[in-house]
Amino acid sequence: MATIAENIQEVRRRIAAACALAHRPVDSVTLLAVGKTFSADAVRLAYDAGERSFGENYVQEAVDKIAALADLRNKLRWHLIGPLQSNKTRVVAESFDWVHTVDRLKIAERLSEQRPAALPPLQLCLQVNISGEASKSGLAVDEVLAVARSVAVLPRVRLRGLMAVPAPASDPAAQRRPHARLRELLAGLQRDGLDVDTLSMGMTADLEAAIAEGATIVRVGTAIFGAR
Ligand SMILES: *Cc1c(COP(=O)(O)O)cnc(C)c1O
Image (tube, rainbow, N blue to C red; front, top):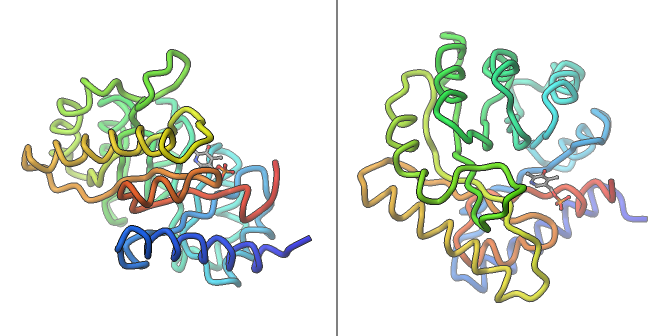
């Protein structure tokens, strides 16, 4: 079985190949290593292999891991990529660097109020239900602009862009369509005058399609840490 360090090498190779195909510089894509269900020791191995940005889904699991890796805190960027309930916003505002899963204004307002003054602004993405699935969390496409305008003026957070988890698809063309829609949605925000630059999209199965459509952050768990 491959080690975490070998897996990271392979994921970086995939990212570099996808960037070359898309005529994009390789440093235009940030790899977010998604460690949910894996231990702090596994995250530390990824750190030793050069990773600095980590994604977590479950708030309590993440807070425990951030504490276990407190010696690395200034070197790491912690991103929340799982659902956020309003009763958990305070610990998230105090512990994380990024939240990708803002799906209503109320959550962003609480994060802004609760972000400690000593920390830099919390970096936010709005989660979009880009495939329009009834069961999925995220804003509907036609709600995004209004929420983005309101989030962009909050003082202690900084709106960076959009995030999506599209419905799974196996062929590359089908994988690209929802990513293209998210890219067009971000371009619409930019045309509206919002200073946004981030497209958080692409996972183990579809990172090439996401990079082809402009992903700036790919969130990869299985290909780095193994099956959950
Ligand atoms: C688990 C998860 C990932 C990583 O998925 P893999 O298929 O394991 O790469 C990415 N984004 C979100 C929102 C996730 O929950």
